Image (cartoon, rainbow, N blue to C red; front, side):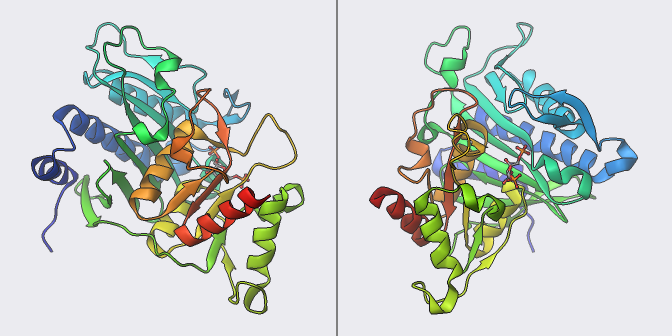
Length: 334
Ligand code: AFP
C-alpha cells in the first residue's frame, strides 16, 4: 500500500482544490504534532506521572486533571511561535491567549478542547483532543474574545484526535473528512481513510441515560420510541453505546453510523446541555456535516448558532441524518 503522509495530503489538497494555504497547512501540521506529543504522554500513563487530579478548578468549575493542564500547555507552546495565529482559546482557560509580542501574528485563530473525556484518563479508556480554526477578522489589531464569537459555519478547518488502541487524527478543511493513523514507530501520520461517510440509517444511539428523568418531553418521546424496539413505532431494535468521551463516540458514529445526544435538561437553565459550542459542538458538527451527517441543537443547525460567550454550552444532537432530523422535528413540534 502506498503511504500518504499528512503533509503530502495537505500539499496535494492545496494543489488540487486550493483550500489549504501555506499558513493553514502549517497550523494543521503544528496541531497534529502537538497531538502526537499528547498521545505519547497519554501512552505513558502512570509511568509518565500524568494521571490523577491537579486539584485545580477550570473556568467551567470542573476539577482539572494533570493531563488536562499538560495537553493545554503542549498545544499553546506548539502554536505560539509559528506566525500562523492571531490568538488561541481553550476550554481550560478563562479567557483568550494572545500571541506574545516577540512572535509575528498570523491570520488564523485556534480553539481547542485539549483533553476531551477527562473522566476516562485514569481508567485507560479512549480520550481525545478537539480543535477548530477560524479566520481572524480583517485588519485585526489586538485580538479580543469578541473576535472569536463567529458561527461554526465560518470554520476553515476542524479536527479531533482519539488516543485509543490506535491514535487517529480526523480532519476536515471543508472538502470531506479524512482519517490519519499515527505510525508510532515512524512518528508520522498516515492517511488511512478517505472521504468518511456516516451511514444514513442506524440502529445505535449514544446518550447518558442516567439523566433520563431530567429530559424535556421531545427527547423522552424520541428515546421511548427507540427503546420500544421492534414492536414499537420504529419497528427495529436499537443498541446503546456511551463512552463518555465525545471524540470516541463520534469516531464510532463516523465509521458505522449512530446518533449522539447531549440534550439540555430541566436541572439548571444556566447550563443548556453539557458540551461547549466553540470547542466541542462546532468542530464536531463541521466534521459530521462534511461526512454527510447532521448536527443540531434540537432547533437549528449547530453551525448556524451565533455565539454569545466563549464558553457557551449547547444541547447537541448529531450523527446519522435521518435520526437527527427526527429528534429535531420532535423539538419543533413541541
Ligand atoms: P470533559 O470536556 O470534561 O473532558 O467532558 C467530556 C464530555 O464533555 C464529553 O466528551 C462526553 O460526551 C461527556 O462530557 C460525558 O459526560 P457524562 O459525565 O454525562 O458521561
